[in-house]
Length: 241
Image 1 (spheres, rainbow, N blue to C red):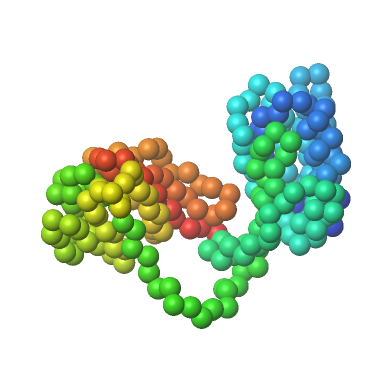
Image 2 (image 1 turned 135 degrees about the vertical axis):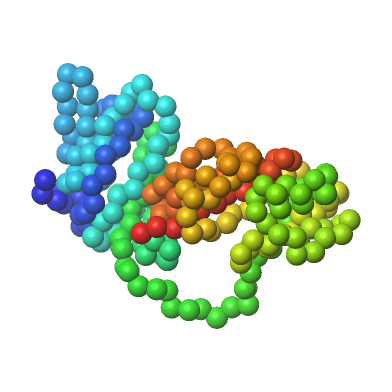
């Protein structure tokens, strides 16, 4: 199929096919046609929006909201045109791990639409003082938590006493601390990893509470999550291009 002008001074350059939950077919058709330049195709039983290699199926019975990523050949032009038409859109952001400049917006049903363009070059290093983050995760039973992070999640004990567990795995360090007036509730941490599927299988085999299989997200991360025995949420993400 030939790539079609978006009506935004940009083209969609990568195939995408998604089913979008919509509440009002006429409203959705008008938005995707008038704001984003899609061609609306309607039959007796369905309505679709087509723009070059992008195909969206409107689903009045669907649950959502959903998320769609469109790769374009001129993300600045798309960004400017959408804002000029009075539709809110986020600022353009350079996402270095996927080599994309991206912005997001929402359609009338709250579905998130991402637009991005590859630039395939590293960021220019910027001076700064930040070198490493050490997340603190609160635990009521610190000793049991240290045992879990060591025996189930594969961390090693760097240091421990009654007030802290310093846990290392490869280049990552996590601080386990007693739950008290300062460290209340539950915490969370995000870990960038090399292979999401391999680690997910390893943690499942060791008895970790894995929430689900790894999922590839449109901004270039394949991720899954684990809850420790006291509810702290651990996210693991693998970058991909």
